[in-house]
Image (tube, rainbow, N blue to C red):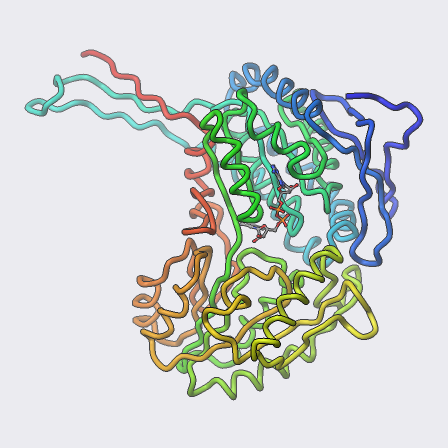
Length: 495
Ligand code: NAD
């Protein structure tokens, strides 16, 4: 990679200095080319970011490969100590991380302060502590079995090697550290490529990790546009794991690229999750759960975007829902009172509005919203509810990834389950019901990685997270993360 000495390599975001270069092998590396990073709050250009390509991909993987033996051999307790030091650094710079993330991706500052950034620190603490609880498994062959008796099988987890981690823009640092923390805890080295629409907090994470004492090359951060740098990362023979969160289309491309070396993949992808509201549900809770789906302006993979409501209560539910949505305040995500901020990029607005317009053209009715906010303009798409949508229509079947919900009704449990499962996705589902037996019965029949009953978005990091069908491959969380980021080894000893 070239080092143009005239370029400015720093952006100032609300007074916070952010280095806009890559972080490779413990030093900052520029690229000859850069790309603009734009804030969705007002469309202003925040920075010019190093635009990585094949040379940066090669350099980053080489750095991760060189650092791997040392980090893999670092005692578990020392690795855990450094991860806790990274968490300390995140907590110390929490306010800076929160304002930079909000400016970069437009999600609410109050959520970054109180929910997201504390979770980022927790990701490191959780996997550091979980590492120390991991045991080994031993099996002794029995007398009378097909194998020679008295042999012991000792099963251990070895770090896999350099990992490529590729993440999206909707919750940049949270989703990145959900991968970085277990990968590092397991003794692997990392090349992280954040999304080009929200590249800034990953750069701050590199600073924090270095200050915490993470050795050079253990965590590398490269910036760039998708395939321009991505293809060389995902097809690299020295990469031993690829973990990706993003869209199905990109996942297909990454899987094809990884196939070259049969590199193991973890894929966390999109969804079209249902919220099933039964007539026996607490009406207020049901409406709250539905309105919560507009969090982050609907740019949440887990969002229950298909409201499936029992016919007998549909009118009352809709009335309450509209009353509550009308009270949501849309505006600048840095303001405490704001409930809904902007959408990440004009291209997403076009996409979202396209879905709504085509749905209306094919008979859907706009109950609420259906366009950009009159005063705030372009990037602020209003929370939108559509009814009279056909089950096989585009807006019911495709992920919109914006503040657009559809409402359909069902007459009985069987129809509810049928509608819920009639999708190519299987990330999550949410039920609102006052009947526990029903909750168990329906959960048993749903195809989804997570089912929430009378709650939403509650995440315990010990539990598996991931999707079925097109929503993903594999599970992360607790021991499942370590199983992915490690190679299992069985040592068989003669008696
Ligand atoms: P995206 O697929 O467009 O991009 C994700 C990342 O992949 C970016 O960093 C991008 O630069 C990179 N990329 C693009 N092409 C690449 C290539 N050929 N090789 C390597 N990397 C490449 O997704 P997005 O628009 O940033 O994110 C939105 C999507 O992510 C939605 O579908 C959403 O549901 C999904 N998502 C899933 C989860 C989950 O946990 N299941 C969480 C958040 C978002």
